Amino acid sequence: MEPLPPNDMNLLGEAATMSHHGLTLVKPGPTRKSRFWTYFMTYCPDHHPEKLNFARCNLCGRDISVKQGTGGLKNHMKFKHPEENEMLDDSVTYGVDNLAVAVGEAGTPIPNSVPIAKRRKTVPTSGLSRAEEIKMKKEEHYSKMWEEASSSLNRLRQALKHEEDVDVIDELEGDIAMMAKRKADYAALLNKITKTHQADVSG
Image 1 (cartoon, rainbow, N blue to C red):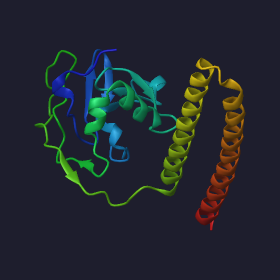
Image 2 (cartoon, rainbow, N blue to C red):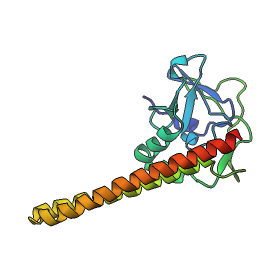
Image 3 (cartoon, rainbow, N blue to C red):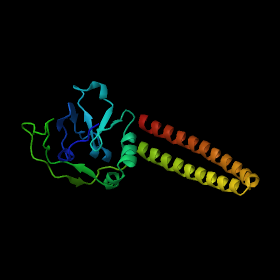
Image 4 (cartoon, rainbow, N blue to C red):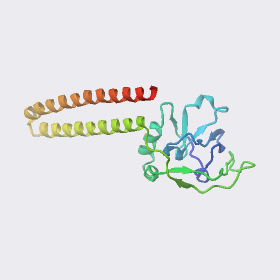
């Protein structure tokens, strides 16, 4: 897995295509609106049909599945490239003035390419979709549950260390039961919201 050369990191354009170590890569088009696509390219379907559901990281060359959306891109950037991830701005999308120089396998410019364009920031025309809002709330909810579970586990370890396990374990059983009820209530609420949203769309 080879990362793209530094000069290729800012490839822009709806159809900027390049060759790299025998691979034909395509810069994501305007339909790819997630900010995480800044650091990824897709495979040309004519040359790599088997990689239709994968994106290639420009930083490390790893293939990430995008079959279920951009969650994999988000996690890859968060855990593998935290510094670059912090530079991604939630409040902007990136426009383009013209195509960038596409670089061939040996580093030579592909004919008829144009100079590298400067990146410009534009204000997004719309906020999060209903589905994205639901997903974000779900992630926040389970993150909070994980923190509560981790805190309970740490308390249990401390109690066992000081031989106070009986009282604390009784208390933890109540905490776990409460967490299970919260999870069930949240699942029911999420299901209700989803059905309402589907009814609004179909209506």
